[in-house]
Image (cartoon, rainbow over all chains, first blue to last red; front, side, top):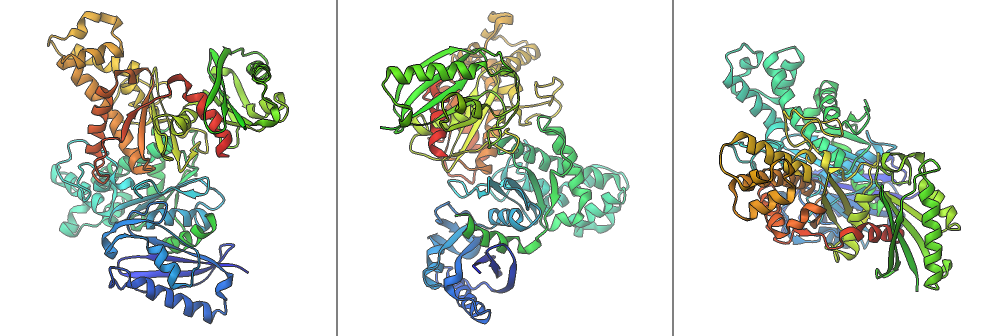
Length: 315
Length: 315
């Protein structure tokens, strides 16, 4: 039996998993992310904890095909990281350090959102397909593209940064990226709330959303919309239409088999994916109607470790 | 010496080229496209004319690595064509027929716009890079994406169909694809004229474009804009801004090294690419300023045969 290791590095925790090469997760755990030593302390910590887990499972390093690692920042295809703010990394090849710490085993690196897309393709909602797009609706909007089984990284490591695609002219507020009118400003959890609050301020119509005051959350907006609240429904429709336009551009750009929707906002379920799918079909008349084109993610927070492990196999 | 053959099938002519595997074009020619036999008569014609050319050049079929063929319609990665209106093809694998007609040589198939992108990457404006996007501004707007040296085809063969990305809400006129507000409606040669005529109808300002009456062409719009005509400049700026938004989505989607602009409209030269580049940088603040990100195509009508030949080598 051969194994591969998946590592998903976040600003707070490092998630790890040991997988059979066929895709079965046999152990997962996490450790806190320590950021000392130019941001790389977590690499030694991760290596040590992996060695320990392998030893407990009586797996020899010779049976480990390699380790994949997802990090929250742009990663160029050769594994180079120019800057990763959340981890304090700067102009380095973190994969090389991890490989050394694991005795020379093969290590592959990727951006966390791109890697998650690969995970969903391998063992999640995209299983059985080899070209998918994953959309993560959380605090921000992230994305990842897999084409013919290979994760797309991009020459600046920015592939899949769909949250920063321009979807609205004349947006007065500035996005984190420096742009104006990015998808993230409308379709992230924060963006959904922003759109809803703008709509509430513009109308005197009654809306259950008013009861939540400043604390209004994206979940509240979705819940109110599901309950038939018209202002909430118009708000979420506006947000999801912007998302569908971006997805239609991906559909005509790389033409994946399906779109996997994940992240906290996706807990609103088929209410959301049905709505997105309807708009998407409006904007892609060249693609025949496919009711299964927009689906919910299945791996949750484990998508990252699955995808990281799969990186080892695709190389 | 090893050789490969590039074939670019259009509705009127079939262009062909014989290449050294290193990329040098040693002979090119074309024949009329005959569409008998379920659209496939041209395959026999092409095979016969290739055999003749090889014989004249004293190249043995054993030294031919294979032939690539670009066709004007969607091609799935495995070479399947569901329908190709211009050639009358229907549910077939035209590459298999060509392979048989050439004595079993390897044949690779692709969509013509995607194949042209591969050609520009190999020996044209993208030479030295392996991830590019080609944009063809002609009667329509076409596109092709190459990522890490591989052409992206898409699961429906629709990858790179950037002309049908939605860029404008509330467009009353319908696009060829059935959509409303597609890029092609604003940035193709026809689209540029349409935008200019709309602008002329909306204003009483003087414009040199009025002298052309109904016969106004995209070249006239560009020429007037270059000469400082304000209505023409506003028109072409509108069209190129829409194009730049789509390109910014590709930049954040697959993140190619550069964009190659080809097609008849691109004869307007650096006037156009500079304008597109400026807008593109506005919409992609995450990507540092790169003045060489938008360049003119170099292979003209030969991009198709170059790319088709390269298809053989990438497989």
